Length: 212
Length: 80
Image (cartoon, rainbow over all chains, first blue to last red; front, side, top):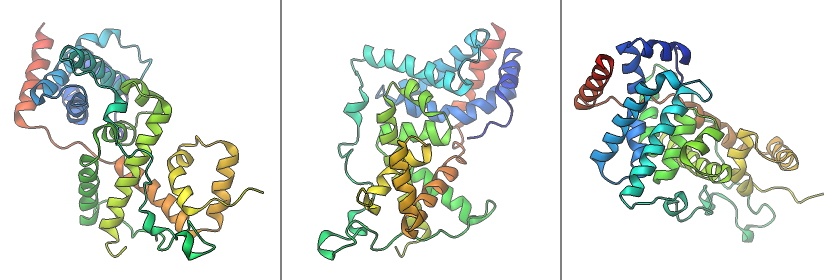
């Protein structure tokens, strides 16, 4: 997600109490914060409350924000720290490995799309390989529908995969910051990201090329 | 000479390939496979398009209650 005004500007606007700057940040991140909180606390109202507490902590901490991480990473880190504490108090100690997709080493592409051993020398090669997608012009109906397909497919992901793809590909946090925010290893992050992307790609292929 | 990588193996390496985290020797095997394989070249391109489109998602609108709560929080903070 691209941030059109740079972060220093936003931080300075917030420090002087600019409501529009706050509103634009909230619109970009609040829904993701609430969803992320859900990883740690079950209760929907509590997840919402944690996201609100995060915004208050952001405002109160503005003068201490030194820009060592990006603003968005700082916001997500405040949320996960609060959520982890709350999750423990609720005796819901969450570990990402517990929440993982049980089939985390299963193939991400349907094995039927590749030749099997009985089919001879080209074992493991595409039977019916991907072909290029048609153009999706940004102002088209197709574009709007395509974005809906992506959102729906992200919603259907296991929650850890959804958290990783949301932070990495939607909000464009670098991998090391995603790992810090979620408290997971680089390897785990890459596996989750790969599985998430593969499913979103499949949903797009089903939508753009239903004959496949 | 190592055995050639299959398409089925390659598709599992695409995220690491795109993120640039593959060891050099593996990356070279991926690239040599891609040179001769349209299916995998298209697959990698589709993953890139997927990432690019995902990056254009904007969050859905907040509910009026959420917006009111957050504005109140902001105005209270400003007064304090």
